[in-house]
Length: 340
View 1 (tube, one colour):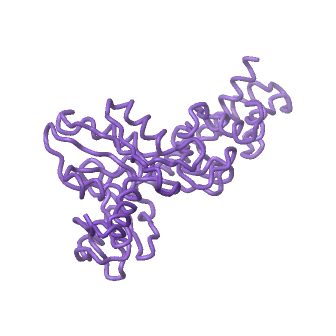
View 2: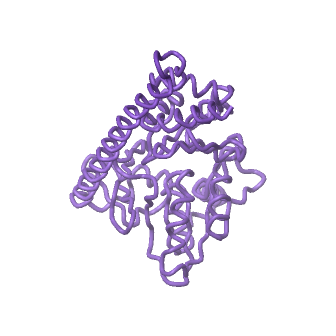
């Protein structure tokens, strides 16, 4: 049994060098976001991406909508997705990558010696591959930083009549707009602009290719020592909170980034900020990944957590504070009360 466990561990370690390829094959409807592969959990029939994340650096994976769904490597991920034993998962990955870990007895002469030599070569190849991938990712991030700063400097202040802003009923604040009409939302990490989210007039959202997303955030307002700071998912939600409260807000851009951003904000201004996680309420998604991610982030950093309070007569498909704000605006308008 110990020999089998060692083989499983070797496959798990070797699979990390091919994490990009394997996760895209196993979770084809996902996408890379920073150092993670973010997808929908096909085993639960999720309708959209966001709740399921796999670290491409460590192989650790987690479903924010299901506390029991998590693992420490790619072998356990394959086992979970395919409903098989881990040894079967390891053998399948071994065959897929041609590692030869489960072929000890097929070698002539001394199998242990042959395997050791083979594994040494594989390990060295994997190390070189990982270094090359890390270098490529670092270069891509640096290039994205340059493109982000250049696009931001060329852009003009965003029009308050931009279709996306009008549809979300929020001011542009400090956003900019490129000449082709896309809104530009700057993302920061470590005090430096590292990426841009472009929002097209039709609402389509895109980050700069190769740019950092995980651990990065958009900022509205300026935190002050001892003050309150909201942390939320999307920019429109953050703009709504900032508009209504005047408090600063950081937007993590997706649920899987809430925890990382909350941890980084906990250290800002010597830890004096009163953090409030303003979570999405994904009521129609199994496991409610928005609430789960917000709860996890709040517990990890000792923050308060806040969710929209839904009136009995509001639609069930509303999920965040911007949805609720816009719904209230419609009610006020229909009642002749105008806009806030």
